[in-house]
Image (cartoon, rainbow, N blue to C red; front, side, top):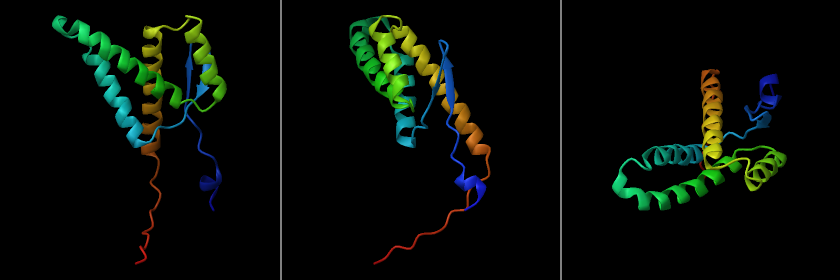
Amino acid sequence: MTDAESTPKKLPEVTWRGRTMRLKIPNSAQLMTWSRMATEFGQIGQTPKDQEIDKKRYQKALQRLGSIVFGVFEDEDDKDWLEDEILEGRIDDEGLLDLFTSLGDQIGNFQEDDDAAPAKKKTARRVRE
């Protein structure tokens, strides 16, 4: 095993509202959902005739957003802190959207750095019949 293989991968961090939080890297399916939610928030409220529908879409999207945001924190203390801040009213919907954007930017930057790293050689697996 080489040093690079034995060294644990450094997790990305985001500092938001004075708190530095370590993040898990979402898998590709989670990133797809992340992207879908970002698109969903961008479309809400674009046409006045859909305002009532948009309220329902907004609430549903906000619930999913919460699941996504809580899912990327590495440390349980950060999840507890975020819950406490929301329950105390110090983080509202707009604040949660801001955190979502900050997390997405940081994870995107981390993945771009990872993509620039040399690729590991993949070995073919034989399937037994």
